[in-house]
Amino acid sequence: MKTTYYDDDDILVIHLSDKPIAREVSQDWNTHVSYAEDGTAVEIVVLNAVSSGAMPLEVTHGKAA
Image (cartoon, rainbow, N blue to C red; front, side, top):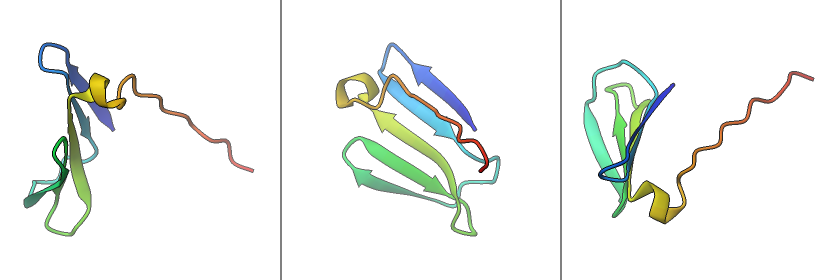
């Protein structure tokens, strides 16, 4: 997973896979998800990331039991 934040435009891009994008779906006005041909998510784009509360991004890693 790779995240990129474009400060000037307040856009957060979460890149999940290197698969080619086959289709894009708007979840709402500021969240867009791109999918590969097999249906897996490739990329998530969040517009107005800071003002919508999506930033700062916090990632937690769980420990195996």
